[in-house]
Length: 77
Picture (cartoon, rainbow, N blue to C red):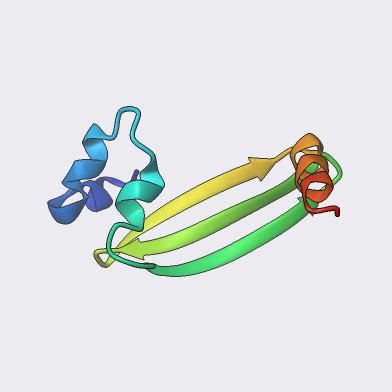
């Protein structure tokens, strides 16, 4: 996390331990977000820039092909 984000309201992010980031990030609704998605031969990646309490927070998630196959199979009738 950027040091600037870990001050004030963001201080709680220092003590997440096993708690999901989303439970804190989305506690009071949907923060402003800008997303980028990259499709790669090895899967795909999503980078989200959130502004949480007016501070920047980047979250990057990478999804392997096995996950995509699982989701597609799950949604098949």
